[in-house]
Image (cartoon, each protein chain N blue to C red):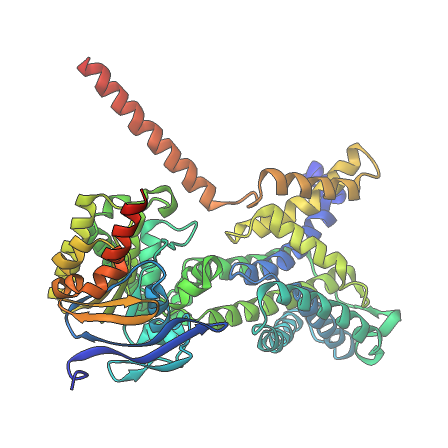
Length: 300
Length: 266
């Protein structure tokens, strides 16, 4: 028990941040798994974060009510974004989403009544790691169900070849719109989780840092299965801290190096169901050939 | 009226790409319950016609009517819902999906449950999923691919991938099946098997429009055909008569005079 408490004292905050980052990564994965690269998770997080902070700070809303409000806020923002952005082609969409992240920060800085402006907001409520774990588990169940449903199958088809999917009766617009809604809800929850963890937020909280973390986690873990972003966020959050214990001041270097290594050697991420299928096929081929060779030897 | 008994009617269909007419005023009729060949030399505009029918392209002028619906302004997914399904000239299966998942995706239109109830995993949705899975396995069996159901489609041979694509196209239970060079890259016995499957499907009530280069297959398996050249209609009707038509012969093999002149130059 004592060793556990020691470990928790050393790595507790890492675990907490890994869970928050997992929410951001899942939000990115939600749209990426339908073929849309979008940085708007940061925007949904800002909406959810400030909404939750204000509701709990000014109106004394408890956690269990603030989180659903943040989810709704993120989802609503996502509906607006999807309506405006889904007419753009993929690379323009990525750029437009980045522009929206910049606009959001400036808007937040200039709306002190809502966000506290440059001074930021103090968040009076704290989320316990166990509560965060429950939230992440609930989100994971949603993604697990989605993966095994008609939506999951349709989104894989849309991601791989939207034109072919459309000739099979799948509307890419509809699938990607739903994906944005999911991304908004999970991004809003992540924003609130971050607010209740840091207990102080400002417009700078929801900026490029989150964008980098969520994209890196999704690339690292893999964007072809819901487990990918969760594993990715865990590794990406834990690695700098554990490395720091060995070599101090390595944090930023380690992040960059890991990202480079992954992109070179595992471009599809750590969790890649397709790679398992390819391995299975190669093994099957080897076995058939060995069997044939054995038969030939028996004849000879 | 030629239109009576026609499931699909193309009327003066034009498709231009930056001033070049890939299809220049094509009129064609596909009779209900027939196997109709769409033939012509390379670049005649056959695949463009398939893309126009399925809504991947929209015609610049003219109309396409299918079973009472006007397709020319519809989105691909709405056209698919009217009962049209297709395969592609260069196999376009989804990367990372097993053979069974490909065909399941093809069954999207007849899943019978909403996305929402499928997500919730309601009992009705689960049983609908299982029965769709059974149908998909049955379709794979029809193209003799059931033994490969759980393998990644991209690890299979070209001919096998083509057969999976046909099974995927059948997933939506279409009224009209468009096959774009279904036997390309297949050996003779594989091509024969596809021809037999096409006949079985026709006898079960399906109408088939197929682009095919192999003339012996066209005469053996098509009930009627449309010959195109440079985006225009060259001949229409019985396959044997069409192929014997001097204009068709010329489009495919060149002019007798030209051949003689080339011979003389040697």
